[in-house]
Image (tube, rainbow, N blue to C red; front, side, top):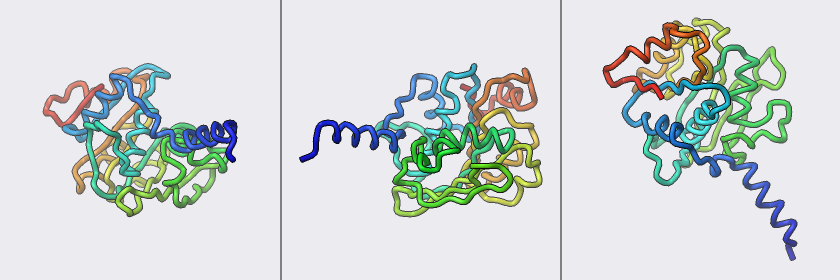
Length: 222
């Protein structure tokens, strides 16, 4: 007979390995997600430690797995997707979007405790040159197909961002304008889809002005 303690441990394990099911966005995060229904480009600009990266990782996991929560009012994909997630450097990409999506970089046994559920992680390849960094992950989609998530960095330079056709790009931390436009171009063939999550430490930069000054309905600033 299973003991109460064993049942409690099993509940904790399931929760730990399916954090996406526990995601309950607060109002600003909800507005950010819902804006995706009408806007191909979105930015979540706010202070530190207010859930920007969490919101980005949760939305990316939702699209990658196809497990849309009840009442989801944002963008939906009816098929597996090919996404990128990027940060300033390879190390910051590993320590922020990769950690939040996949789990602690230094503990491979804990991969699957990020926003992407462990049961959906099928395979991965490691990046070269930096310890515990992932290059590409294969993720089980609810349709039965396989989504692909690759990690990039701005320090790679624009040339390394060329050539791919993608469904979406997530920029965690503010990118240079040339990297942003190149990343966005990767999604053009499939309908323009990008999200940015950052604290505007550089003031009224080219990327910040792009969102603050645009009024044609393509952009959304949260």
